[in-house]
Length: 338
Image (cartoon, rainbow, N blue to C red):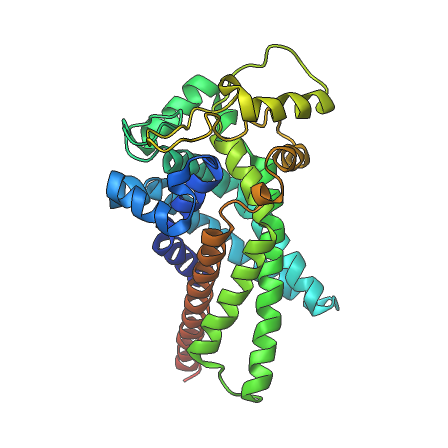
């Protein structure tokens, strides 16, 4: 648990700036200055700076990452070993362990994810370069404002979308990781350590592949957690909602979140599609109807890089610290026997 918490939070902090770029691309798909990852990265850095721009939202990210990964790894190892000892096939045990670990951790990291994504989309306070619809002074102000104006439940906006993204992501990540490590051990030979190179490679490939597969769910999660909410005038059926929002996305700026850019380059006047639903599947349908498959994979480049590097760092740190802790326990046990 300690090894997983340290490794996971360290990986998150190192890759936070790339996560900010991904959030801007997913939350502001029509802003051309964020169209490509290198351009978005340099634009945010030049306009808003490192800490107030690329590392905006890092405080709630850390506050959710450390306890969340501790809970995740504790539940993952416990459920995985219990299932394997009970005769469950290993591949199914790895998948199930990832599901269980992330489900328990979600109660901690989802509120921090809401704060993080809004601050990442906003950028610096009174941001003159980008209008997100939010303007928080910092993490505490964001939390107080959300609770006061939207209610405590707003801290769990997109909860279903978040767990529907993270449960399959974690399950796939660790199923891939355990399988890749098996292949690496087979390649290196029985009883041999696979080394830091294979440890990093297996973790990175597992995280990157899982990140690409679950990217559509990540897009929906980001839109649900960052869109500016306004009351709907009248209830609509799902089919009517799809048609109305498809037209609104292209022609009516009144139905879109206010995330336009001050750039002089001609841009579509509408911002990101306002989903007006809490359903993940309806969100996927709305995005597909208005943006196509490209909309589902908005920000897939930075997400793939972020998840692969973060996963590689986290799992290398996890395995290294785990080995060190096992050595300490063995020495402590030997000392007691003596």
